[in-house]
Amino acid sequence: MRKTEHKLFWLWELPKEEAWINDMASHGYGLVDVGRIRYEFEDIEPGKFRYKSLFLKGSYTSEKIRDFIRFMEDMGIMNVGHVSYPGRTCVYFRYENTGEELEVFSDLDSKIEYEKTMSSYLVFAGILNLFAWIYNTAVFIMNCIHGHPTFISFLCIINLGLAIAMAIALVRINRKIKKLTQEREIHE
Image: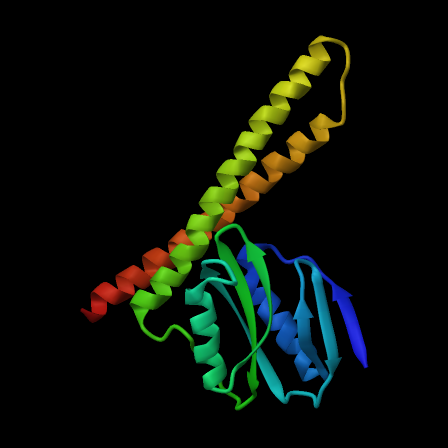
């Protein structure tokens, strides 16, 4: 039997999303398809599978991403879905639960590069939201001056809120990058 859940996770909350998907699997619901806020599950043996989501640089159809997916599938790790973003892809994998976490990026350099992928995307998206906020604020002010206030003020609040949320996430990710970089320097 299939079950569809709708849940919002911010892009920078991949570990939280992954934990939720794995919790669903432990209760007998295996992820079979995914959208931005849509998760489709089917009945499975509880705890049989675990899931890993990865935010990768490149489009889903790019040769680099397709090669990575083939590499994972050759290791018995199945691709169950993806969500595309401009220049990036979040790919979802399913693997047999052996009791151990799937460690895709085992060395510090690849962990740092992975975090930088998320960081660079948040900078891009945050700047777009900031520009949208400036534009919407200017439109709102002009409409108020001419006596035609509109719902644009609501968009201003949303754009500014998203830009602030992305900035906070960016600070957290950059702290993680700094910690990994310091750890790498200790081991060198």
